[in-house]
Length: 190
Image 1: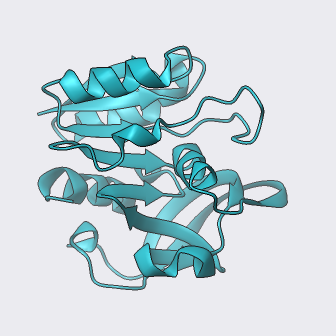
Image 2: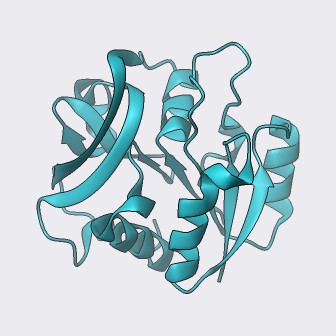
């Protein structure tokens, strides 16, 4: 299977861990430039591609910066396409949907234990708590999106599902449990 990646980093180098993780799971990757492409171009490329699974990457850019690239909301719930948004891209979607983004005083970088709030196909074969890695400065309160929330950490939304789009506020490509979560997503109808 080919997995589409929309690279939200300014260079391809920033996306290297995600590309490597997908390839290590036995899949090929096709990368679109999410920084220099318009929303229309990204949505058109995804809609008309034979690739069914698309991941929008993280980014070190501040999602609230005036010129920050954003995930085109038109891809959410797109027929016959499965979308996953990681870290920065999750923030982009939630920001555009009107959720309040909160900021830490500094970037939070750590390996952490994440417990499931609900049973879900994403978690098949992953022990509880899951060990994940995060690197972000903004988040949405878990109480704000409780209806769609699958996992939270210290009151922060970490995994949610919205319009058939999986939103993840950490970097699954950087841990063993995270790679299993990616594999579960690729193998299920999420």
